[in-house]
Amino acid sequence: MKNLKIISNEFLSKHTYFKLGGPADMFTLVRSAAELEGAVRWAERKRFSWFILGGGSNILVGDLGFRGLVIKNEARGLSHRGTVVTAESGVLLNQLVSYTIGQGLGGLEVFISVPGTVGGAVYNNSHFRPEKDEFIGNLVESAEVLIAKELTRERVDRTWFEFGYDYSRLQQERAVVLTVDFRLKKADSESLKKLSFQAMRQRNESQPIGEACSGCVFKNPKGRAAGRLIDEAGFKGARVGGAYVSEKHANFIINDGSASSRDVLELINRIIRRVEKVHQVRLEPEIFLVGEFD
Ligand code: EPU
Image 1: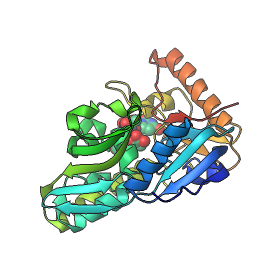
Image 2 (image 1 turned 180 degrees about the vertical axis):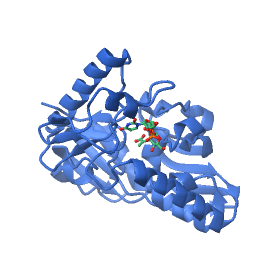
Image 3 (image 1 turned 90 degrees about the horizontal axis):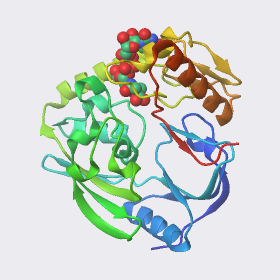
Image 4 (image 1 turned 45 degrees about the vertical axis):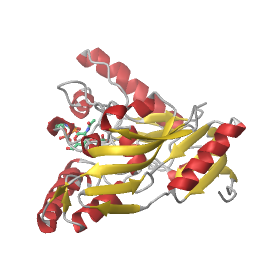
């Protein structure tokens, strides 16, 4: 493997949807699954903490940044054989979906405007409409993962991931997805395009797309909508510093350009406390906290 190009003190705010996050001590960009594997192996050998940054959605990075190596995953190889599509884990979901629609392969079209990379989507079992069982994990046939502890590369099947709502085993185990095989179905490209447009329209109508935010902040509690619970608790427009709750959808927190990660975290905590008091439901964040907060 060629030498890693390490950048010191790279501000992670440049790489996240929230536009928040302090500096990473070390930062590197990888452009293939082989480079990704090489970077993780290097960090493990050196005993550095590492974090794989995908599209930068669904995370809140602390104002003090990250101590260790952040690996920005831009491994974007994509191919198919029959109805099985193989994607490197840095492929953007949008890129994957456009590709499958173009090839007349159905299953992923509703994920057209879901942010993030294939690796991130598998890590969190990304969904579109969870109530309709539209989870990315349902379409995973197998994957190549690097188990960090033993530094072994393994081919695993869908059951290995133990997929659940916003959950996969990757959240418990130090392992890295290198490539994923999705099993899709032959379909007509034009019909898939229509379905993807419908999904995109639904999101655009109800969500603050294009703002500096990170998708839904909280998971939907069983049988309830977090957005409605937060809305009913009177939080639309509520603000801490430069962070405020969207007027369009209450499960979104927006950075007005002047927020700190601390502001967002404080707003999250206020929402949790108030919703518990009003609705007797304890909300759980869907976004992941990364790095150091002051
Ligand atoms: N609602 C309100 N007030 C609000 C927002 C929503 O009353 O401010 C009500 C709506 O009227 C509706 C219900 O809450 O009756 C559900 O709202 P919506 O249809 O917008 O869906 P959601 O449950 O809030 C889920 C996912 C979204 C996904 C959409 C696709 C979660 C936490 N959210 O939203 O996922 O895009 O379905 O329809 O699972 C994400 O995970 O980042 C995300 C955005």
